[in-house]
Amino acid sequence: MMYSWLDNGTTRVVVILLGACFIFVCIFVVFSSLPLGKVTYSNAFEAPIIATSTESVVTHIKTPDPLKAVYLTGWAAGNKKFRDRLFDLVDTTEINAVVIDVKDYSGRISFPVDDPMLVKIGASQNRIPDVVDYIARLHARGVYVIARISSFQDSFLINVHPEWAVKTNDGKIWQDYKGVKWLDAGAQPVWDYLIAIGKQSYAYGFDELNFDYMRYPSDGNLDDVAYSWSAGRNRREVMHDFYLYMRENLSIDSVPIPISADLFGLTTSSNDDLGIGQVLVDALPYFDYVSPMVYPSHFSKGYLNLTKPALQPYEVVKFAMSTARDRAIAASSSPNKLRPWLQAFDLGAVYTPDMVRAQIRATNDVGLSSWLLWDAASVYDKEDLLPK
Image (cartoon, rainbow, N blue to C red):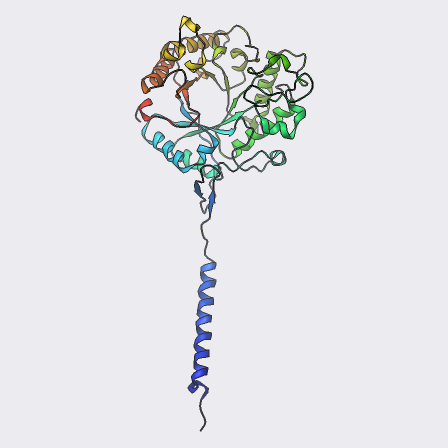
């Protein structure tokens, strides 16, 4: 008896299996062509950062007046918990700006870079992997974003270029009491490196470049310090030349990038360069903003005849910033360039919201309206701040 091949049981099973395979392949092809999201991970606290499917457009926003900022480390800026805290602060309080570490005392850069010079140095870490998108999200909330760049305190760069370092008298790499290595403030290759970091940061959306540790070392065996780049030069003159070089070279298409400088709190009242090259009136002509670090805990016993300045935040900040204001006016510079770093951390005393607010009130009472809060732990109490 003749049978059609469709009537054969074995053949029917084979046909069914082949059909099923064909359908599976079709489904796989369709789904594999769809764009799927990617997840990357920050080195900070194992915090996941979800990459967006579209590239953020780099923008810059105008400096707010008055500016009211808090500081974040690079690790904190790449961590979801700290981001959520910052978003809550800017959504509910007077905070309208943030200062983020781009290069801290270690010398490591907080995000991947594409500038050939920076790539060759190799200092970048993936602390803020989605830096462009993160800044765009802050800008969407109206938050001004400042890049903090530690200038001459940099152990990493010295490992790559030991010839740029502060040395001991016998030619070894000098270190301060904390074991941190310092770059010679007179080394122009270092200046060019800082400019490259600044321009990379601005290209990613940072609105302003804030330079810290622009000075000679102050802590350590200073009798065993030797400078190969600035030997025989006056420290104040070296720093003046550095300020000028930063201003002349930090621009895009001839448009100056906003830049700011952090100075010792004592520069507000000192009559010399404090042995570190810093003089307040020298910095004012070249920076858009100058921020004396007038943390009350950093003033020693006897300042203003106070037994413990940390316990008198209003008096310390008011005197420091009033003298800074007067010096700026005498130097024909706008006092509005001044915006102090204020203490929001426990040192010398437990800093309550009232003590933080006392510093802000002192700043306002001398006719200044902008300020920045510092806490190395990047944690801020909403009670320190006025509601939005």
